[in-house]
Length: 125
Image 1: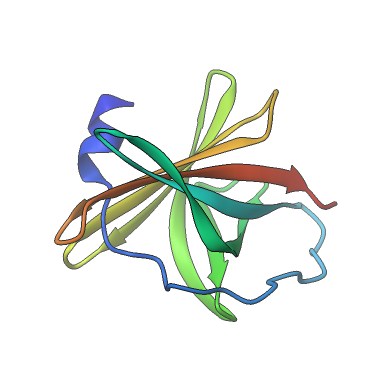
Image 2: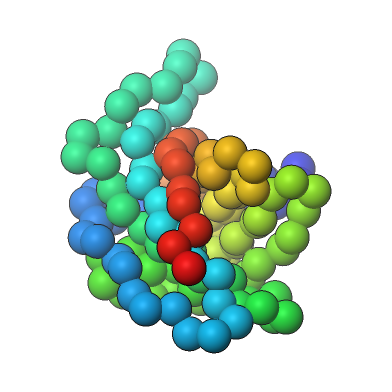
């Protein structure tokens, strides 16, 4: 997981639209709200709250990030008590960790525009 955190990067769009889509068979869809941005001195609320969705396709290591009505390919890695999504971009990467027991979301971005964000997710199917 430390390597995953080292890879994270690039900024999510400033605002997002609702990204609900009907899941197909074999997909797990996490609808998420990004509510806080975090820096070394603490976390602060984001206003407006941003919406994203992460899809995991059963039996595959690939998934989809839906943000602002656009789909982006991500890699999916199961881990102990969490689901890891990794978006690799030309300027870095963004790692999304969803804690399976609480639904808590942690986002780590590295590269040109480093940031850490938090929020919550719910499985919609």
